[in-house]
Length: 232
Image 1 (cartoon, rainbow, N blue to C red):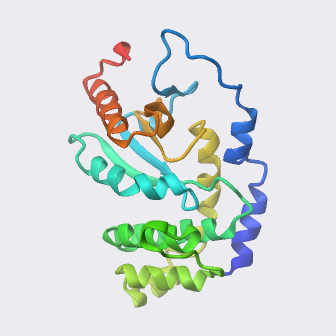
Image 2 (cartoon, rainbow, N blue to C red; image 1 turned 60 degrees about the vertical axis):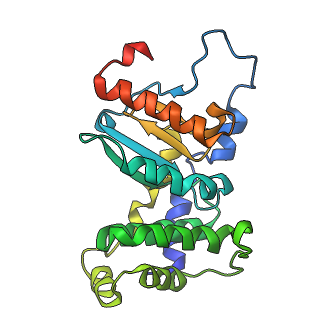
C-alpha cells in the first residue's frame, strides 16, 4: 500500500469541506434562544442509522484523545437493539497521517476488532502525542509504521499480509466516506456522537463537561430507544 495512493485518493475528495471550513461557514454564535436544544438535529435524517449510535472522532483532535476511552466504554453499555460504533473522520484532507491511521483502523476492524483500543491510542499518540504521558508526536509516519502498530496491538502479521493481497486490496478506497462524514453528519466539532441518525452531540453542548455529556447522551438514547423522540 503506497503513501502516494492515499494522497491521490485524498486529492480526489478535496471538494469535501474540512471541519475548519464548515466552522467558518457556520452562522456566528448568538445568544441561545429560550427553547434552544443541547444537541444538533440533522436536516436530513440518516435512515440506515435509526438504531445506531456512532462516535465520530479524528486522530488529530486533542479533545477526541481526552474523550475517546470514556465514550467507547459508554457505548459498550448501551441497551440491546442499539448498535454502537466508533467511526474515524478525516477533517483535513491535507494530513496524510490521519488518512493512513484510518486505513489502518479499517484493516484492524476487519481482522481483529479487539485490537482497536490499543491501535487507536497508538495513532493518537503518533499523530499528536500525549501530554499526560509525556509522549511526543512522531515527526515522520509511514504506512509501514501504521501496519507495525496493528501488529503491536494484536493483529496477526501473516493474516494481515494475506488480507492486503486479497479481500483488503484497495481498502484505501473507503477513505472518501470518512472525509464526507464531516458533511453527512453536519459536524461542527469532534468528538461528536450521532444518535439514531438524527441527533448529534459534542462537548460544546455540555460546556466541555464529560459527565454532563454522558447524562445528555443517555437521555437522548433513552428517548430514541423508546420511540419517544417527540419529547426531544
